[in-house]
Image (cartoon, rainbow, N blue to C red; front, side, top):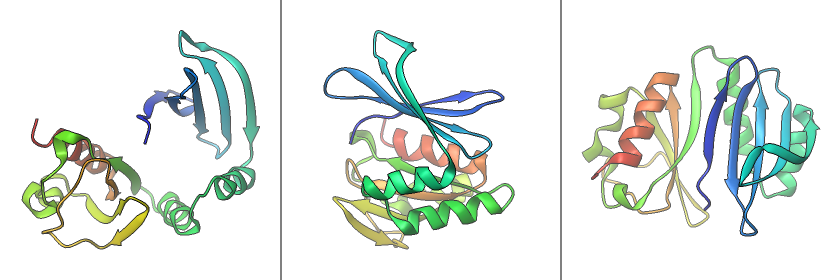
Length: 161
């Protein structure tokens, strides 16, 4: 899985981008109003966008389905957007976090956020037990407050470093 760079765009939304195998940046700007903007840029000048497409929320969901998105993921995100203060995030485990258990890291007690699922090699592990051992490239679904999820990201990605 490619490393995704996330940048807050004050007054606009959040920009997510990753480098493709042909050294271009491919990304999405998630606007506060629900629109999604897909863009392609040169990695040497990421502010110079070669092309972009703006998608309404329904169109973004259709594209996600075409790319292999999961309806459950969309529903969880939709529910989270409807609850003030609730944040949902997918966090990839780097090599530094491999080998730790969820309970050993004390994710819930240290951050206030909850691990609700782990994806490992396209297999979902919903509601993992505290003794669930994390591996490199696992993707952890975390739910909590914005601050709690940010703390969980630091804990999960910085564990062991």
